[in-house]
Amino acid sequence: MQSEQNDVDAIRLQMVQIRREHYEDVREVIADAERVVGWGRSGWPYVCAALGATAATVLWILASRDRTAPAGQASSSSSAVTEVG
Image (cartoon, rainbow, N blue to C red; front, side):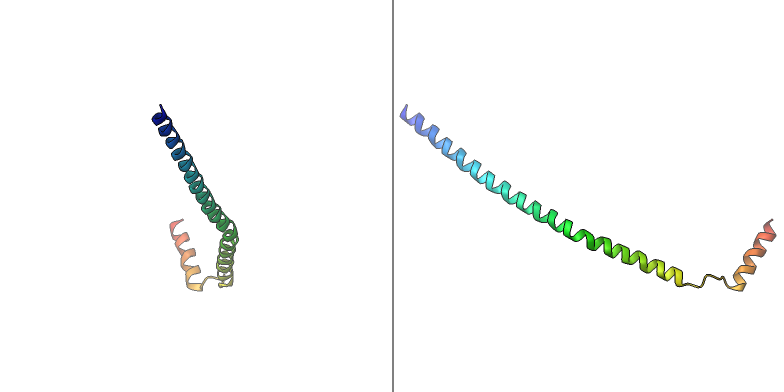
């Protein structure tokens, strides 16, 4: 009877130790996840700013182009339309 009680107590102590280790592991995982999420939140404005700057640069380049077509292209495209039609 005493031997069985000692076995039960040993098992309970092992369970307590396993729960404690599990709890510590979960806390570490949660802390790592919070760090990752925190970085994502703080880094997001930089991504948006980079995309906005790229879009603004592309629009600026497109707007600075000469909007008039060369004379040769304008006449050939209008003649192609008249030949077909």
